[in-house]
Image (cartoon, rainbow, N blue to C red):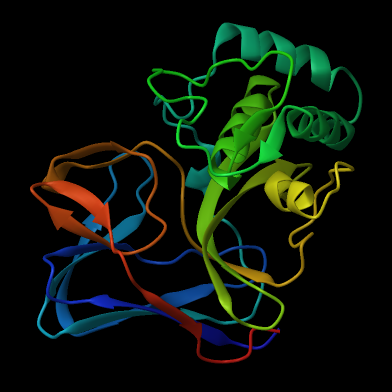
Length: 272
């Protein structure tokens, strides 16, 4: 893979902008994020140590350009160090089920059993009410199918991995289709087994009608660009606590982050 860059452009007339700074992964090292159209201030997230960008707009458009070397790198250690929050704290029944489902044996085999078990609980959709809404933990799902997007499915997957004692982290980024067009934000789960990392995307398996889940970075095709990690983020300088995640630039209004109604995402150099 050669080096490449991804640009996310948003309006600069709506207020201060909070954005992720990019993330290195097993696929490619992040070489930094360049901001045009505003002045930036770097903030440190309290639990993971990852940087976020707070930008004061100085133009009608603000663009964030994330550069990647194309050379393999390591996911940051902090991704595997869970900070307790309502997005990561598993219900006791979920913990019991995950340990039973994972069973004994090789760690990768245990992880595959867990991922396939999670797949049997979901159908891909974007429900108005999320299964964990209103809870201070990740609730256990019983029989039947629950509607969920990549966020809900992978929240449950992450909690299941960790409940079974498998090192795992949550990654947010951007998904590009095989033709190079952007489908917007996406998320996946990374495990670390035997010193190596594995990427899991149950939601994309389900979207192509497959439940034979395994560690595969792009089961649906295309490619993904990581920009941040973890859930339940705290940015104390802004008074922001337990932010679900930061996967794209958001506008800060009255101390709260809000998604932009419109944004333009494009890759500037070939990614494959």
